[in-house]
Amino acid sequence: MTIADSRSTPLPTIAFIGGGNMARSLIGGLVARGVAPGSIRVAEPVTALREALAADFGVVTFSTAAEAADGASLWLLAVKPQVMRTVCTDLAGLARERAPLALSIAAGITAGQLERWLGGGVAVVRAMPNTPALLGAGITGLFANTRTDPAQREQAAALMGAVGSSVWIDEETQMDAVTAVSGSGPAYLFLLAEAMQAAGVAQGLPAEAARALANQTLLGAARMLTETDDTADVLRARVTSPGGTTQAAIETFEAGGLRELVGRAIAAATARGRELSAAND
Ligand SMILES: NC(=O)C1=CN([C@@H]2O[C@H](COP(=O)(O)OP(=O)(O)OC[C@H]3O[C@@H](n4cnc5c(N)ncnc54)[C@H](OP(=O)(O)O)[C@@H]3O)[C@@H](O)[C@H]2O)C=CC1
Ligand SMILES: O=C(O)[C@@H]1CCC=N1
Image (cartoon, rainbow, N blue to C red; front, top):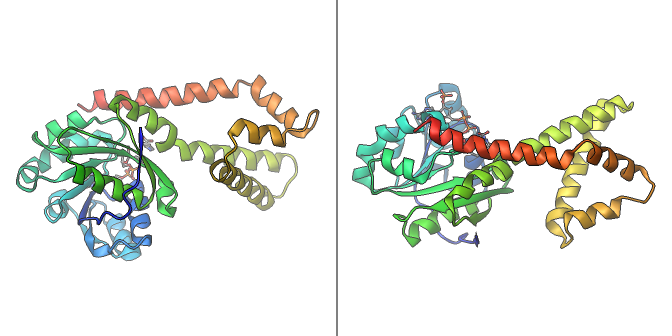
């Protein structure tokens, strides 16, 4: 594992194939960080999504993948795993002509599958970002196939580095675990936020107050995790006065099997990544 730092590498024209939720987070993050909207081409079949991306970010939009991809040497494949094979197969002729770097953010789908569907001999990078990319606060796991040269690896790291930090993964099989921890991870925090807000309301707080208290607590705690050198267990111990309120809550979480439940949830997400690869081959 190496931490990527390629912030000074210039980005080429990028073709997003798929303009849904994750593409929107990445595009928003890239434009907010100074990437020229005219250098971002987006293929998206849903008219409303296309129009919203053009209106919000000034990017160039197309209804078909081939139109967007034809103008770019970096293709960011941002469609669902279930349609990736068809999308890549349709682009295989163009891939032979343009020899692009194909950077896929799809859960589960392997570099070998992508290379095969794109016609073979293609430089492929798998990236697993997350939606905080929209705020420049994302983290991405990256894996490159052997066709990818150092300049293309730099480009991939520069793209994802513009919207947060990134980490190279040496073993492709670990990408499913990356997906389970950080790709899906924001949803786990949002679920916790929902539960804390509802619990606050159940204890008599007004909904708005419960929302502000829960959300700012998650933000403050996340900043302590990332901006101090203390580990999570040390930070937790500092909140937990012996015989106090936190201890009462933590003992309830432990008795309910929270750690084991998180382990099972992340194992299920990891296994689902492998299933998505097999089911869509
Ligand atoms: N959402 C997230 O937090 C993350 C998602 N990912 C990965 O990103 C990928 C996209 O996920 P997400 O953004 O959530 O999904 P979305 O469904 O929101 O976005 C995918 C978009 O691609 C469109 N599309 C379908 N076929 C084509 C085509 N041939 N050419 C161009 N666009 C097409 C879809 O249209 P239509 O709806 O009509 O099919 C849809 O609008 C997935 O592979 C997922 O695993 C990775 C990390 C995080
Ligand atoms: O839920 C999913 O499958 C995608 C991949 C990671 C986040 N969203």
